[in-house]
Amino acid sequence: MEKLLRSNDKPEHIFIEIHTNYLRKFGSSAGEVVNLLRSFGYCEEENKVWQRNKDFLCHFIYKGA
Image 1 (cartoon, rainbow, N blue to C red):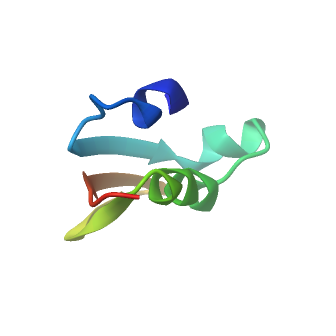
Image 2 (image 1 turned 90 degrees about the vertical axis):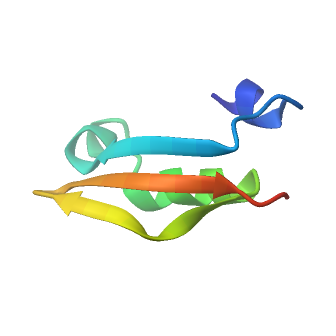
């Protein structure tokens, strides 16, 4: 994923489903995923984060690093 986000052909929009229970099993968190995307110049689209149970559906837009 990082190779794609570093490329010149990175996607302008990313829709991602974040499963917090699975991330914990790998020693990660939803915050870590969000911070990674932000570090590549993406931000959450306003009013485009939905919560379903403990999972999150998010829309990120590339704004530039």
